Amino acid sequence: MFFRGTATAAGSMVLVIIAAIAVFLVVKAIPAINKDTVNFFTYKEWFTDGDQPKFGIAATVFGTILTAALALLISVPVALGIALCLSHYAHRRVATTLGFVIDLLAAVPSVVFGLWGRDYFYEPITDLSKWLHDVFGWLPIFGSEGPYGKSVLLGSVVLAIMILPIVTSLSREVFLQTPPENQEAALALGSTKWEMIRTAVLPYGRAGIIASVMLGLGRALGETIALALTLGSVFAINWDFLGPGGITIASNIANRFGEANDVGRGALIASGLVLFVITLIVNMGARAIIYRRREFVGGAA
Image (cartoon, rainbow, N blue to C red; front, side, top):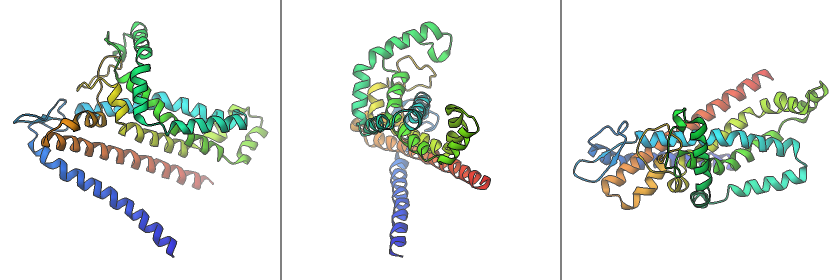
């Protein structure tokens, strides 16, 4: 009874903290939004100084979702491949060592990734951007003629490397939990190792894969310093990945909070409230998908 009461109190405290954060954001954001002279949700620019403040989150929300989606598109296939290699192909001693190294990557501060991406990944991304434009320039996403460097592509690549260890570690643990009898049954029926993975391992771990991807997405949506150092900070809705530009809610807060006036700080907190809501929606959606998947597996059993 004591343990149950303690666990219930701890779980309830999490809800209380989330509610307190939401109330704080709303209270701080409302005065600034009331002073906004344009539509907060559709305006693209950010001018909080002056007698008539004009600011909106359209460009920052677009940049947040775009960079996070591109980072997932880059990192998830690589992460799943590494996880499968560590769980079913690599020698156990090698897999343990590599798994430990990958786990250590998750502990590297984001500012280190940001500085590394800005100083050492700048030239390779510039060369890659030129090549992509020369070969695939007929596509709008690769249509920019430069200058190249700080861009959505650079920020997304750095972000993909940051979320790679999260998705890899969780997916590896999920794959290792696959019942041995399921794998042995597939092999006994004449399946190759890849066919066994495709028919026994991946379906069993689908809910865990979704959970790991959603956790990586949550990290990508809220990343601040790395993107502040690698994006071009241009308030525009543009599908071009290569040109100078890109802005996210978190990077905009990091770049502007220190020098913002009262209205500016309130406006940044209001944008943080939007990011808070987006993150809640993503996590609730992930939980719903996982819950439905578990119901399906339980019903099939």
